[in-house]
Image 1 (cartoon, rainbow over the protein chains, first blue to last red):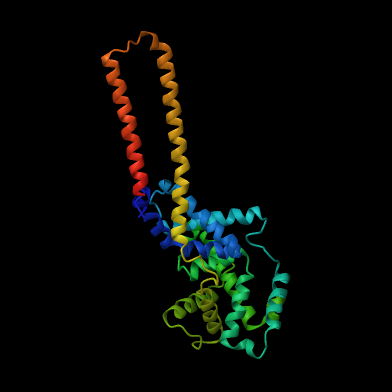
Image 2 (cartoon, chains in turn red, blue):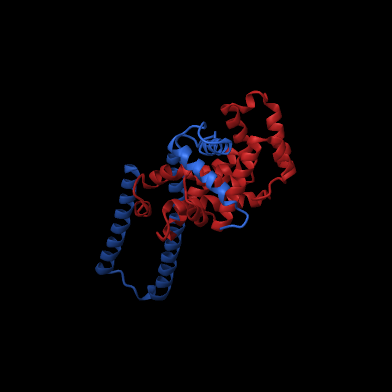
Length: 183
Length: 128
């Protein structure tokens, strides 16, 4: 596929985009959240892929290489907008936002699967960009921790720690929203 | 192993992740397992927004247009280099030239090359 794109074969680049647009969208969307910004950054990502594909050395899967480009593009966007990658909200603020989500819902229904899922989606959205992205790569894209480390440049141990703490936090919020406020 | 990671909790998270993948559902296991299965299920859902339907086609067109400026800059540089060389050559050796039949032949060959190049480009443009 890479050779076909570099040889400028018809539809080769279009096929490449089609194959990896899901990954790019998931990474960028999870990082920046705003759909318009995410679309623009996805375009930017694939434009970079097109320009610099000749630098790809086949030392890692193409998926990782494209994922890394998408992650870097989204990261620069967050830096430009001065959005912190890890501590977007302190624990108290985060817990207060979560409480608001919980309290706007019918508490009786809150324990149904559908409501729990709705609550969880809102809680995931409130996680810091890096944690959201790591969880998405691990669960949705089913990428291993070493591969995520290669893609993001974050150490494997740090990724594991983020995954562990994010899931534990979500679990505590799900089981007892009051407790999560005391963390 | 990270010191801040509780091994049992980590294993519960991982088991719920693989369990939810193999047999979706939240009823199995204790409260902790059920919670982690719910979390795994939520995390496997794609974002609500999607890329536009013809994103790949549009991207392909953008990339093709991105190629063009580089080519045109390169062609401009080459043409400029050619013109400069021609001016220097004429200025240096022009007085020694005699326009006989041999010279006319070369001029005709040069004009022929230009014409062939122009025709090829026009044909490619039409084919596109």
